[in-house]
Amino acid sequence: MSDLGADIARNRELIFGSGKPYLAIGPILCSAASKLALWGDPAAEDFEIRFYPEEIIWYSLDGQELTRSAPVHLVHFCEDTIQLLTRYAITARGLPTAQFKELYQIQLKLLEAKVWAGKLYPEARKEIEENFNKFKRK
Image (cartoon, rainbow, N blue to C red; front, side, top):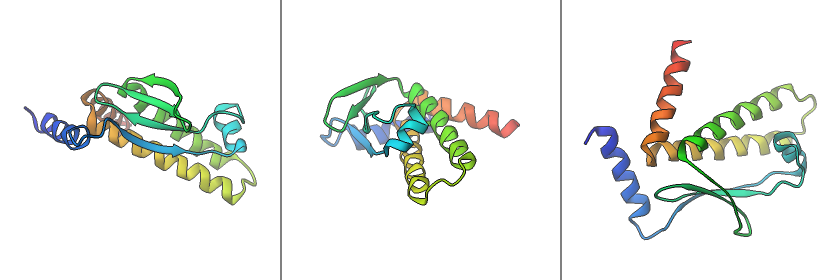
């Protein structure tokens, strides 16, 4: 087994072998103004992302399943949303400090989710490395 494979196997054993059925990232909480800016819907659900051995499931804070995702799709979502948050925070004029802090906290949670995807799923790690190599070549 390669070092990468051994690293992922060790991480999976630590997380999923400890008796916990999943690893949760969140809650990801947004004000109505941030939800409108990010998702175009001020009433969008706050959520958490749960990492299971074979898939990733997004849940509302009251425990209802919102969607399922392959690890690679989570990586793409995190990257796209982090870019969107950055652009919005830079271009929004007069953004209240509280909303700026909130957007920063969302970015941190999404970055944490992306990192865990890379630590637990080989396909996510491969996608992250490929994206990094593309960025490095530019």
